[in-house]
Amino acid sequence: MKQLIITVIGKDKTGLVEQLSDTVYNNHANWLKSSLTQLSGQFAGIVQVEVSPQHIQQLSNALSQISGLQIHIVEAQIKASSQQQMQKLTVTGNDRLGIVKDVTTHLHQLGINIYKLKTKTESAPNWGYPIFTAQFQLDLPTELTIDTVQEQLELLADDLTIDIEQ
Picture 1 (cartoon, one colour):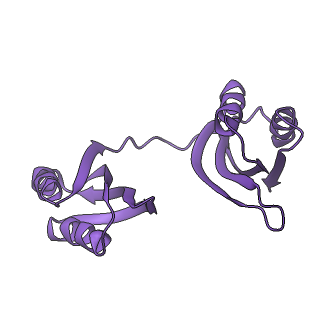
Picture 2 (tube, one colour; picture 1 turned 90 degrees about the vertical axis):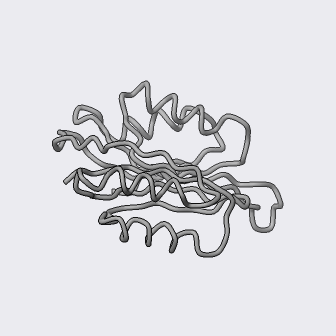
């Protein structure tokens, strides 16, 4: 069996996820993992499936026939378990240009791989100005402590709150 990563994007409409899941199922693939979302009227997602090699082309052809979706398929790179540690990190602060760039630059300089990132901006209750929140799932090198990560990120700005979930 092969594992494939399928990315999709297109104008959002009712029934897209069902159409995508039907196509996967009807072409002999097993839906393993996914992250799907709607952003500003666009549907975007990533799906990991498992399929036997003889059905890959059939699945690819069927997915490309879904109207209104751009599809990109790559073979999954399954790596052996690493000697690293997963940590959850939340960064909250007044919204401003460059927060994601600043945080990700510092994480990269520390040798940290970002496993997952989810961001949002919303109006602060009773204040009216936007608050930015980023939730990271990080893959830390074993020699790096989470306290060091927190200290480094807190140097970015006084208005950023760094929360570590242990």
